[in-house]
Image 1 (cartoon, rainbow, N blue to C red):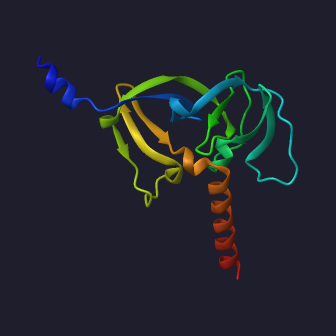
Image 2: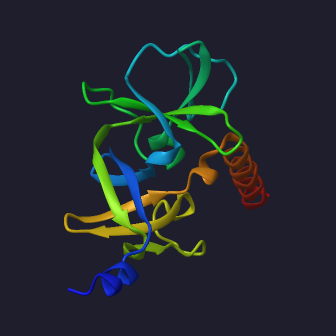
Image 3: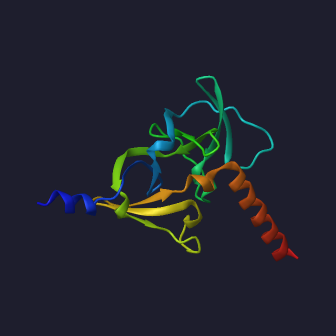
Length: 169
């Protein structure tokens, strides 16, 4: 084989932590994952959005913990022995924990095997995805962490509230 042509056909290799939420699997870019911890006691915080479950202490840092299931309008979390909290470093440097049903495996994808998702798509969970990765085992939806930042979620919630109020009037 010609090494030069092989190199041209390969894009950037990116590793993803593949998580499960119910029967669906999602990928989180491993570069943003700070830690993966077993489910533990979460200290509740009053008067927060329903998807914010509270805070935990990770190595002296107080980390907010959110339910990915509730953010994505899925059924509430069912805590099992496989439930984990993925600690992610967000764009501003802050840490956020996401409750997931299971951490499945690490997947390395060639960037050529990831198709971007159009924001206007009506597909389920489309607003939280940056792309869909194709690999031998099937497809994995790649999460867009920017849409999961607290500020983005609060903006989304305010917009939903406005829509609900306008429908009610």
